Every structure is written in structure tokens, then in C-alpha cells.
Length: 419
Image (cartoon, rainbow, N blue to C red; front, side, top):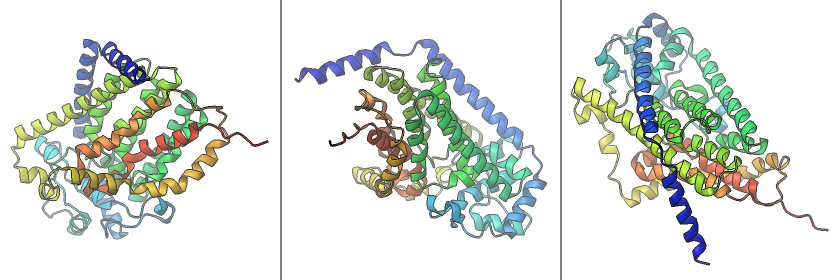
């Protein structure tokens, strides 16, 4: 009896070793990271040349319409059920950065901004002649989308475009999963997102840009799973995440694509040990890409601007307590409060899925394909301060957990009718 788990463990270890990437895969990953850097900085440099007149005019219009009166206003009634408040604070910071962007290395690295919405309102009233402070903690790659959209369109139009792109990518993810898995699994994965209670991705470019990366990444890894090594696929996603990221969605660019990738591998008939090996090297690739680009960004910033810790982190060093077991538990507890909503909505999702549910027994090996549900937990343990304090930002990273829960319920044996 005791030899069964041991045999599974040995098989998994052997599969991990045999599935190790070739040297050329690491080379391709390195080239991919370099390509992300070159393309990303080129995009930022290009959008920095856009004229300021249109952007300033649209900010003036939005300010007069009251869009910047609150940092965290209530969303429109049709999105209120997705979240109780919007993160206009982050959008105002992003708009301030866009106004101050110039085709100069120092400006592109220091990311000067007017700060929260009150500061942006003051700048709009005084024709943007007030001084701007540095926001150099992160390189905000979402400016590649934010500045062009707000330059050419009013804020109402930008929100329609942002929502339209997001809905279109969700629909494309559904079509992809339906084609490579089945209708039931595609329905569960897509619908489970709406339980994360995050309306930001439908209205605010600062949040949507990284979410678009998550959706595009999930679609591509499913479609390219048999054409490229997971190390390379996920390594490039990790590098792109760093380019767009300010950590508001944390590990989602790994968690969701990895769940979709694992489900597709399972549907292809892969053994659990093969799936685990693929997940392991995919996680290694994402980590390499994510960390490598962060190091390059921070090194470049340090060499060019020589910032102090206060300039880099601001007040966040005092806000984030030292990591300990208590903080990890606090982060987990706060972020998993959504479980109450999950339980209430489980019945609705299952009723939708059960109409196309025809499995006579629990599929074997599915447990291995659902291992990506551990990714958000690991992320919270690695960054408990960020996850505990900014809990409203990282609810969305629970998407893989919620989807995995519903997939498990969907996979349970269909009850036998009594005679």
C-alpha cells in the first residue's frame, strides 16, 4: 500500500529530469526577454512623442465632468455588483505620468506625476503648471495603451473601448477553451472571473492593460502548447508582466495561463507526471522572465538616476511590516474572504454547466491539471505585505482558485437516479 505514493513520486521526479529544457530553450528565453525590453521601451519612447494638447483637453473635460473628484468612487450601477469601488487613484497617477512624458530617458524612468486625483484636478485647473513628483518605483508599461487612448479619445469613449477589448478577449478565451477542451470547462473558467469582484479591468486602462496580457497569454499557451517549450512560453509572459506590472494583479499572469495550459495538457491525454513536469518548467520560465526584467529595470534606474530608497519606495517601506507567519496568515485570510461569495454562486455556475455535463465518472488525472490553483497561495506567502494591505487589488488573482473549485465540482460523478 505504501509503495504506491512512492512510485508516483519516483515517476514524477524522473519525468521532471527527462523533461528538462535544452540549452537552446534557455537561449530562446533570453532572446525573448531582450525582445520584450527592446519592444517595450520603443513603444514607451514612441508614445512619449504624442502631442500633449489632445491629452490635456480630455483631462480638462473629465475634470469638469467630475471624474477626478474621488480616488475611489462607486462604479456605474451596471458594474457595481462586480466591485464596490473603482481605483481612480491609480488611473489619476497614470494620467499624470502621461502628461509629463517626454522623449527623454530621465523622464521615462522617473515617471513624474501629479499624484492622486486631487493633484491631477489641481494640475488641470492650473493648466498643468504645478510641479510633479517622481513615481519611479515601477516602470509603468501600460502607458503604451493609456497615453494613446486618452490622447485621441474622451474618457467616456476610452471606457467603452477598454470594456470592449476586455469583453472581446474574454470571448476569445472562451472560444479557445471550447475548441481545445469542451464547452462546460470553457464556461466555468470564463464565468468564474466575475466572482473576483473586479470591475477595474472593464473601465480603467491602468488595470486593463495587464489583464489583457493575462488573457492573451492564456489563449496563446493553449494554442501553442505543442509548438514551443513551456519554459519559453511562460518566460516571455513573465517578462511582459514585469513590463506592464505594478503588482496590482500579482501572479495572475502565471496562475490563469498555467491553469488553462494544464487543462489542455490533461485533455491531450498527458499523464499526471508529465503535466507536473510541464507546470514546473513553465513556473521556472515565468520566474526567470519576471525577475530578469525587474532586475534590468531597477539596474537601469539606479545607473541613470541614482535614486535613494525613499525616492524608490516612498512611504511603502513603513506601510509594509516585516514578513512573518502572522502576516502571511493575515494576507491569506483577508484575500480569501471571497469564499463566501463563491459558495453562494456555486449553485448558479453548476446549474449552467450541468446541462452539458455528461461524464459518468470523475476523470482520472484531473488533480494534476488543477495544481495551478496553488499559485496565488504561493504569491501571498512570498509577498504577504502587498497581498494583505492591498487586498482589494489582488482579489482578482484568486481567479485560478475559483475556477479550479468549480472544475472539481463539475468533474464529480453525476448522481444516479433512484428507481
